[in-house]
Image (tube, rainbow, N blue to C red):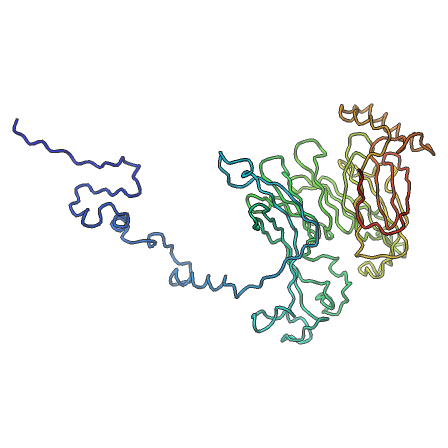
Length: 484
């Protein structure tokens, strides 16, 4: 028809789905000459700036520019402002497998988990080694010379801290690092600031508390969900539950105990609700059962109240440490019990805070119902403790093992018990306890045996009857025995 046909210009990229290099030229005649589809031109036209300027944040309050803030931050975190302290491993590490935080749906099974070596470590800061003009670290200045400079091997200011660390065995790097506690190191010679720097190194003015990590960490899922938790106790009396994937402390934790926590916490579902119960014992004889949220289910003292607080007695009893806890079906009733041994000392009432004035009295072996916190029948058992008391001597963990010749009664446990069955089993155990001799190897009761080393003697106890046998091996037994 003689009319010239013209093609309407349209953008070739779909709206709302522009590619990285797309430039909406439209009718711009100078688009090609000014860079065509180059990203920087488009951003300059739209945001009136190049490069990172569009992303640069406003300077924080008190700073004229963001560059000034960055410079100050860089100086603060510079290597010269920090000291590298070597970690000290004072407890056994734990090897655990934990799911990786970020993993693809098609990843190989080996890539879905991380093997971590969990370590509870302690750090020591010593003014004599680090406090000088070269490092710029100022003296604690608690000694006679308040200007500093009088620190010696006997007089020094010390700090101690602890942390939980996880080493990735496959990729060879520290995947988990969380600092927990910080305190002064009162155990240093003449380093007790409560006593003005004049107390001897065996002072107990802090009830033995300090930021040491002496307990072995464990990894569990407290609430039966997807989140993994690392539990560890410290000598500050704190029990932490750390969420591994989210690098934080679980709500309700840490839990404060009255004395240092130097033994590994025990975790088990004893109630049967899929949530785990946490059992903690401190060095002063406090035993507590906690739920997954850190709430107390039951708590008790290992010593009777009149043994610790009876005003009519010139000498009182004190706990001087416990063994690690073990758990098992001691009675053979299907109910779990906590087993541990405690070191009992006597002292004058005025010398409670002076461990050097404590005299070893006895050892007590406890078997405690994990659900109620009550002592099992025939417990605690008392064993002579000799005359010497060494705070450096650890108590071995009890071994729970069935040494009975006939172990068929465990089939009943698998099938489950009625209340009538439990009463029958307890009656069997009571009758077996009355017998002076046994017709079968291991005794006539049910349940597990407790094998407990104390000094040079190996004690073998039938848990359901408390019938015991002692074997003197002639030398000190420092660790838990094994059975095979």
